[in-house]
Image (cartoon, rainbow, N blue to C red; front, side, top):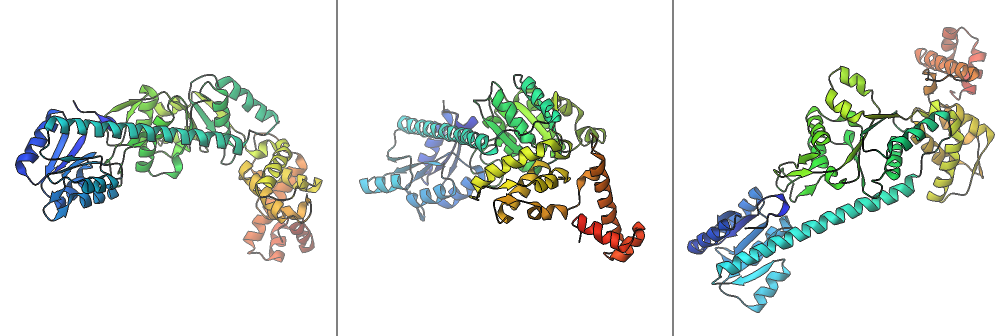
Length: 465
């Protein structure tokens, strides 16, 4: 019985112009339960290899109009993982050395004993299976190493505000379970950091934390990314590839932007969550996995649910434990702490001199709307570090913020200080008036029913000149 490497019956291509020998080889290999395709020429071999993606090629050294070693080189160039055994009635040491250097698995001389041939074929598939296991272990090690790097590079969640304390308490409670978690929040709030915090505190912390950005991949690519594919499943699939579910076995799979997956992928994802099993794209073998899924989205999934864009059964499979990460404008007390954290980390990264924030700079950072949340704050701090001349970041180094429209005019869940709310509203009204007046200040002043001199003052105050 043949070795069933790569999750399916071994596929062999036999290239032999002698019909009697070709039929004999096919017969013995089919008795061993291999799937065999036989051709008589190099031209036919290339066509069959491109169409059927064999795992092993048995080829004669001397073919009509072609040399077996060159056929070997051409086939290996297109598929480096292909195993090739050469057959010849004209065996020499020089030819054998050339064949092995070209990548042949073995070199057999005719007349070939069929039992010996079957043994060599079995050994070739064993080597192929061992190599596949090695590649899989290497992939797993790469992910684990990346996990360690990310854990150090991205740091911990920063914040002491009451709303963040609630997030911390939830993380501690859910980390020990294996239930699915759905993290919601605007872009840039740190949803992945929350997922990583759960992973680091869970019993799966020694296993991989595997990430997939569902919104960045087309449907077909995402399906292959999640579940993997077998060799030949589609154009360009020259080798089998494990999916993220398989790589995350015993660990955690983080599905970011889960709202962007297509209905077809939603069905397959639901099955994995329910049955803990799946098939690779183009494959027939069922693969069982033990994976905890943490999903995240910046959209209102319940709204997508009511409008039919997201499956109800999948939603409730993901929404076992919800965690909401608040936007930065709802935890302004954390802004100075976050800013100091970024100053320290970024100064080392970009090899800048140490700097400090002036009280005026802290005031600007605290009152800005931060539509991009923590990610935008990090970007602003890096820009300010580069722009500042001395050892302090002052309000002038943050002038680029005051020129941006503030997102804080949207009413947040908590109350704002009255002066801040009035300033944000006044700034938004002035921006709207300037837009309606096409930038003509006297016309904008008339729309606002204030004197042009007062408008000039306010434009300067809010950095709108």
